[in-house]
Amino acid sequence: MANQQSTSGNPRVDLEYRRKKNVEEMRYQVITFALMIFLTLIAFAAVGFGDVSNWFTIPFILLLAVVQVIFQLYYFMHMSHKGHEAPQLFLYSGALVGFLTVLAFMTIIWW
Image 1 (tube, one colour):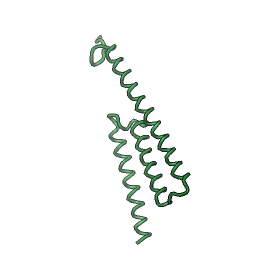
Image 2 (cartoon, one colour):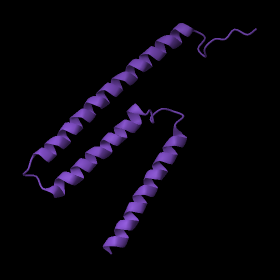
Image 3 (cartoon, one colour):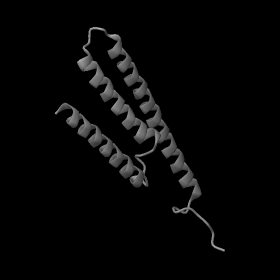
Image 4 (cartoon, helix red, strand yellow):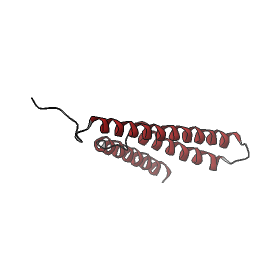
């Protein structure tokens, strides 16, 4: 019977590599989480200041929301990893169809 070994031939090296990758990934997730909390606080501050116009506040909050969605997809839902090309294709094509639908309805209503 064949001896089942890892690709490098040394399971200890593979385990050490995996631990380093896990630590690196956890660091990215913690940094991303902290950035998302910071962006949320900025959004609350933008709303809290009564002097700022709604013409600035609403697009600014939407921009912060888009940035947070990107962080969520790439770091918490692991879209940056290999092997997620098909879900990325469906997600981006769905977002494109949604954007085009909203754009079409806005065009029909306003023109």
